[in-house]
Amino acid sequence: MYPTVWNYIGDLATFYIYDLIEDDRTKNRIQQMVKRLRKEDGNLQHDVSGILIEYAKSLHTVFNFIDIEYFFVKYIEGFIIDYQNQILDFPSYLSAEDAVHGYWEGHILTYYDVFKDEISKWIADYDFLIPSSYLEIFFPFIYGKESTPLNEGIKWLMNLNLLNKRQFAEIIAKSPDQIDSMVKKVQRWTKSEYIPNFISLIDDLSPIINSYPDINYRRGIYFTLYISIAMSRLYKKYLTQPLREEIRGIKTFTQVQLNEEFANKAKKQKIRQFAYTACVLNPLMDMLKEVKTEDGKIEDKLSMLESFVDEKQDQISNYHAEAFVYFIRARIFYMHNQYEDAVKNYQKAFELGRYRIGRQIKVLIFEFLHSCRKIENKQLFKRVHDWQSFIIEQKDFSHNMTLEVKTFDQVWNDFDHDFKTFILKNRKTGKIYS
View: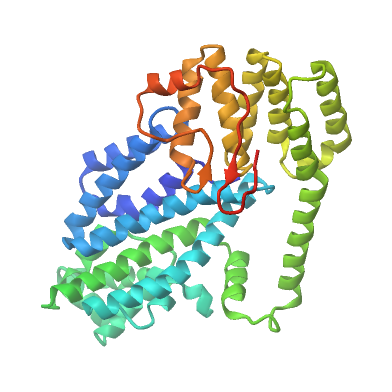
């Protein structure tokens, strides 16, 4: 299980996009596009592309520098591609909550390494005022600091100008009678989990920022504070204290230094994954292959499945494998031309498994769409096809599905056939997934 498209894009918008926008009409337009993603009923790719276009415009308004705009748009696009690949490459047996937190844990680990490589190039190429300790600002918990990236970013800016909090507040206060209130605001910026709006923050800091005549230095401050705010929002939502300690351990401990608790947790995860694969996943996959035939009686196949479910009910529930059960039941009906019953079960399998069953979702969707076509259910066909058009990346896999740009009628007509066999094969390894 991973975040839904709506959850994931909505989080990216909250972390990286809304803060850049002062115009309420533009913000509302993006929010409406994000809301449409919740139903997963429409053109997901169109709405996500629209959100990225608005993001690029907002970046231009703030930074007015094509390299920064390009960097962040590609940065967010990279997040989305990584998200799509995760869904396909890593089947999940975790609960929805654990899986979402696990996804963001992996996200933070991955982008620590990206920042380590990429941001250093920016410092060298553009002479931005990005600190040499930028990783300690963006990922303070890895370095044992109990603070947010924003806290560290503001402290860096004060140190850069050799100012204490009172002096800092005196410079940015709009009038003398605002100094005391500004001191309190600076204290919140440096010590609490309060996260201000980025546009409001740089407006408050404009006397400091504008004191640098070099525009690249000013952009460097914007760049550092912008990422620190985005990271602070991400941490506040997903980075619990145990998760901070775990990631810090992964990044800073040697194998010898790993404490017993951390080592035991990794061992337990490995044992759990092995049990899931051996006791639930492999038998279900074998059954999927076994029922991929028109031979035999439908009643016998359904009885075999029900017997397996009765025997393995606790394990199926414990590992959240119900999607595979519905998939098998749907395929039994599908192979015997009972498409109405097939569609009912494919729909349940799709709802439960589209973010959970890895590359098998490609096979499920092919059979699901074919069944929808057989019973002339265009609405459901369109919704499922739209989801797979956005999520499924097919560059290195060989099969007869296509993501070429076609009209809906062309796609609909493509499934007007009686061919039921769908082969999903990895070109590099030769492994057959279906």
